[in-house]
Image (tube, rainbow, N blue to C red; front, side, top):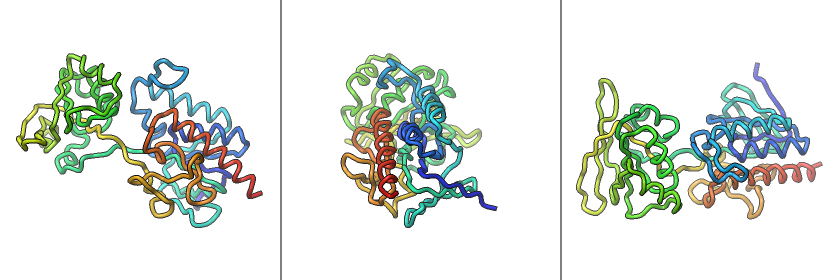
Amino acid sequence: MTDTRHTRVLIIGSGPAGYTAGVYASRAMLSPILVQGIEPGGQLTTTTDVENWPGDESVMGPDLMVRMEAHARAMGCEIVSDIIVSLDLSKRPFTAKGDSGTVYTADAVILATGARAKWLGLESEEAFKGFGVSACATCDGFFYRNQEIVVVGGGNTAVEEALFLTNFASKVTLVHRRGELRAERIMQERLFKHPKIEMLWHHELAEVVGDETPKGVTGVKLRNVETGAITEVPAKGVFIAIGHAPASDLVKDQLELHNGGYVKVEPGTARTSIPGVFAAGDLTDHVYRQAITSAGMGCMAALDAERWLAEQE
């Protein structure tokens, strides 16, 4: 028999946006249910030092998310370990189905599903995922003690990953297809000063090279984007750090999207194109993409939901 749960507010996602929405919706006595999703805590659980969270000069990302979850629970938010696999926004109450088999119905929905890592789409990249190719340095860096590692990318993500991997690797080569990085200046300064990091400008990953028995990466082939010349670099690990894409698959055919898949909200609000459905965090934000802005949007979404529900009554 299918278990059906009803709530006034269903929160889908558990990063800073989701947990903050849980705190505010609970304080508004809306008895929210929060479904954590495939990555409880979101992207911050794969981040090391967070130095831009107000009130903490430095805090580990996973620790911060544990505190946020505990805060939401303390306020009365029910937090469920489940993954929403389908969502019907065509009629109210809205209906979501969990991977567990549970059906959730809700008077209002707050979407906080965040974003997930982007990949290059190479066959060799796919072939060695989990066998030397990764998109999460904090998850897998430990396995490459005293090994040479390649990081691909040029933004904050790539620089953070490269710096973190120096804790384990004997050498980190950062590969970027342009001649300058997009990362914040303070992070670039740390990167360029680090003795274990070597920059390789104007190159892109052409192929991941490795063995089949035992399966593992042995190096990469890099293409010079200006000359086309191929360079082989030895490496035991390859970390793809080219950013993230919004996790909007659940709603891509139901809500208005823009800028490559981000959920569109009314300016200054968390309201989406369907009344009673609100969105917050990296799912909607293609500009700032910070933990603090995600938390702020989670607050907005809960307050918007509270007001909307009051209007319906």
